[in-house]
Image 1 (tube, helix red, strand yellow):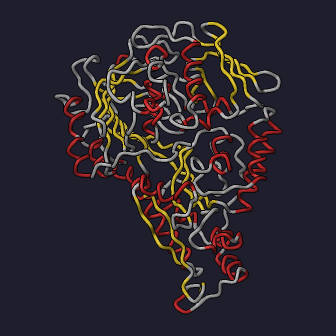
Image 2 (tube, helix red, strand yellow; image 1 turned 135 degrees about the vertical axis):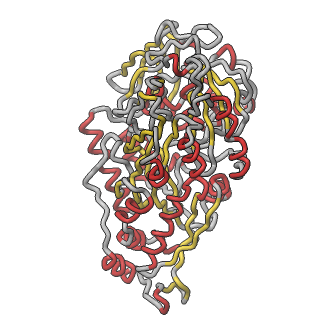
Image 3 (cartoon, rainbow, N blue to C red; image 1 turned 60 degrees about the vertical axis):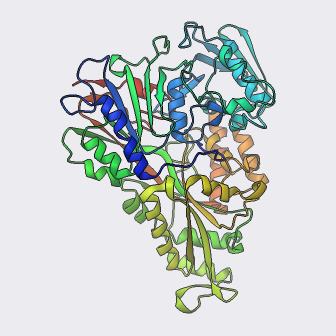
Length: 558
């Protein structure tokens, strides 16, 4: 899960983003017109175009997927994900856990160095986690979820770290790729007092890095330039073609497509299938289509809905039956897969038996049973007025495909007599309204339409619906002791078959309660110039929050 309470700056308008878009292109443009310099690998910039804005370089202030993606390039983590959904070495070359599952031991690479040449040791790891433990209720709260149950962390020698938990923690490997290991010799002076400096430190360059790249310049909004870390020690080292990597943010999807078509950039990251259709016959451009670990869902407000109708499970079930998911997948997200389970097919222990239904007759019968009779004008009545639900829509994050999804939902629900009212806001305003005052979820909304980018382990999927995540990862305010228990059991169970049964039960229970209507599992398309190769079909593309190794295989072929 990639997002918590927003601490965002205001976004740029499209015009400003367009004006800035030429900066990296000018740096990277060659005499042959391509996005990469042909004067030698030392001068070449591999330029990435994206619609996902980089907002923070400070690890304690990460919010967007791009914040995490760039963080993977700058800082090491103990492990990272492979495209096969397996935890792979990063700073740690191996790990074990005790028979009880409450102790984890990690063995680090002995030759790891920071970009300033100082060694990366177990002390840097213990410092990072001890800092999170110390300030987890305040300025390190963004990482609180990842260390649930952690009681202590110790370095037994320069390359060995031992974590002790109050109970078994089977999901630890899935959480720690999200925690950048920080250089103690740099951050120790910051992690003092009340911790307020933690979210204000790594905002200016240079940054002491331990990942494959070092930030060189950043304008704070749209353009980042990184260079290869000469001291990088990792098992997946970038080749000479990646001496410099640029990141360019595009507010408008059409502008991003135009940039790759005109060879101003080398790689367009996570383009929607609809946008990518304009590239199918473009000269010198290759497309990679892959199933992502992202979904789009309608999250019902389970704590304080504006309309109490959605507190009735019969109404939620009726709305579930009224959704034509196949149409959403084919029209809004071509190549997408109709969804229903709160986990995606890429996740470990995804329950494929939970399948969507589309039955207007059943939906009408359930709404009748719930007491909402059809009135004049084709809408059901509630206290003499049309039954109306207010839907929060992330107009900024969803883009055109998401807004089209709302239109399709509105048409589907109208067929069974339910009217939708769109409350479209930019992402920051939307989350502010979602959580309400003091996390009461009473912002005057009934459901949230939003996408969510997740990893592979069930822990990250289930925790977003738990009581412990209210006000952070929990987007719909649901608090249910039975589901909480299933999550805790799954996170404490290492035996694969037993854990699978628990995770299946959690998915089934969430489905029975219809706490969220998962509409589709989303595909992504990466577009790159034919002068580059080595792009992998991972769950989030070659530049992602799942790890840096998918990028390091990319190289220039001319």
